[in-house]
Length: 237
Image (cartoon, rainbow, N blue to C red; front, side, top):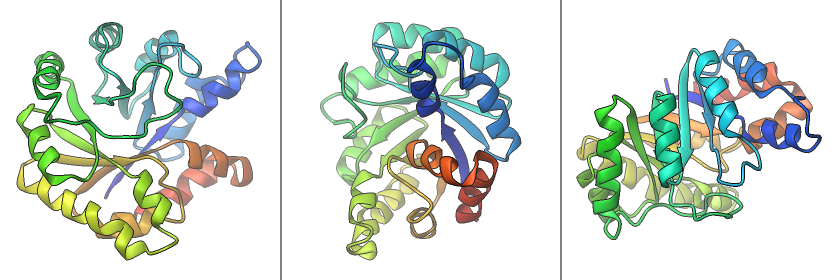
């Protein structure tokens, strides 16, 4: 079964709007696990506009499923990950100040840099994943870095799903097949939701994990968090 990792950044955004600790992101992470999610994802950014560094440290002691930290591998991010030692680190090519992730790595251009970063994390027993598009040549370069997995950037799929879902998913099927040939584990995330998730999962071979935040938190406003987690798990079955 493909695992569901819930990105709780939006809960931290809501908390930060008032400056106190409501909602309590640590308590919610524990509850989300209790509701059935198999992982918790956070993406701390340099300006701490949602998840803060102290949240990352607190979550490490509270999360009992898989803890996944996403981010651009700056020196301070690398230091935080090596301190906290999550189960997985997902490296994204976001420059400082970007609103949200909007592209995968150019693993050809950045191969040496990514190889060095992956080696640091793998030496400490931390599984690595690179945020990638569907270009099979670049996925080949990603494999050369020594990463354990890639996470496919799925916004193009989500944007085209309602227009032509077969055409939308086709490059992801090919990319997944190539990742499997190269021995790479496969994750996916960005704009997946309860409408497009099942079709993606059923057409992308070897999908180990999806990371979903914005859509799931929005659905929780309507359906409640426990029911929403179950709805997403149902789509993955």
